[in-house]
Image (cartoon, rainbow, N blue to C red; front, side):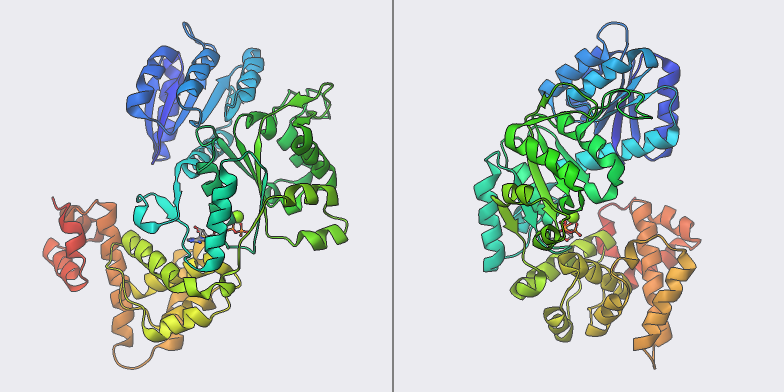
Length: 475
Ligand SMILES: Nc1ncnc2c1ncn2[C@@H]1O[C@H](COP(=O)(O)OP(=O)(O)OP(=O)(O)O)[C@@H](O)[C@H]1O
Ligand SMILES: [Mg+2]
């Protein structure tokens, strides 16, 4: 749940936003004047602002300037009519997240809102080098071995400079974590971090996404557009999957790196920006150059500061600590005590080749923990967890189908006495734990949710050791 402040002088607009956003599970605050909104910010600390441009008294642009002076990272989405679009575009130059012309397409608007919230979350979510110092809502970069120590040193060396950094490494090695760590330790940590996955944007749109365009630059360019480089000015731009960009767009990126200038598509004058670029790729750029897909000049420019993340199989000494970290994290989520790993299970973790690197290890342990529901994790549990495709657990499937997959996997490696009982117990425990989670530990409500009597629920909680974790919040 996020906290969203909506500012508009029309009560009707506020009411419809309130309805739409609270329907998405967000907490909505409203203000009918910009000065009232500014007063709310320090105490309420919303995660996102949605604001009209034209309002009596202070207008949206002026309010935005003041907000930026206090908290430059807070994402702001403007609402505008056609007559004020130019102001909204102006706001984008100043670093607004986006704008929407009335009347809105609710689906498009919700997509933008989600992106803004996710971007802000990642900007703020702390990346720490030591899990002991990590707040609950944070990510730790785990790895005490010499290879990761070298990575930390490099982060330390480059973070405070304004140098562009190329982060290389196979999939799942932690490139995004490193990018966020550099940002958070940089001089620009108070300004926004814009993250863009270049591979997710169609080639034909990417250039305009990055550099913007003038009205009429091509058919369909009905208004000027401010690109990411301009929008991120004063801050940091993280271009993920930079190896997937076309050579023409690469040439423009090189120009920005060399002399902080670029042209909007169809634009007449070069635009000056002050952006720190972080880039990542899992592609072999040397091969891409040989194949004519990546420009050598950009490669040499980016290569100056490179952080190369080692694949997990080359730093196996870090696996026990990583495993412990993920098991604890998922156990906390599932509200169970962190289970132990059997010796055979640890041996398997240490010998697996991990083609998907840390992400694969993370998913494997997550699945194993869900399957065992807090019992010690055996090698067999891990084998099952690895047997599924690396992302299967993240894809929304139909529940009975997912359950059937679990049942099949379970029966591949279990048989004999208590096979039936143990599987049912796992499901039973998950149901009870989840009902308690959803009701904030309220036993009466959880029992009602499951259609059980309260004594039956309590008996199950005792049986599965769920009592301790929730007793703090008992009704
Ligand atoms: N050293 C590490 N310590 C703890 N967690 C890590 C580490 N490295 C990666 N992770 C976790 O592994 C997952 C993948 O990391 P990340 O997204 O940074 O990888 P990536 O290199 O960007 O992969 P891709 O190339 O597929 O985008 C994330 O959940 C991240 O938190
Ligand atoms: Mg990534």
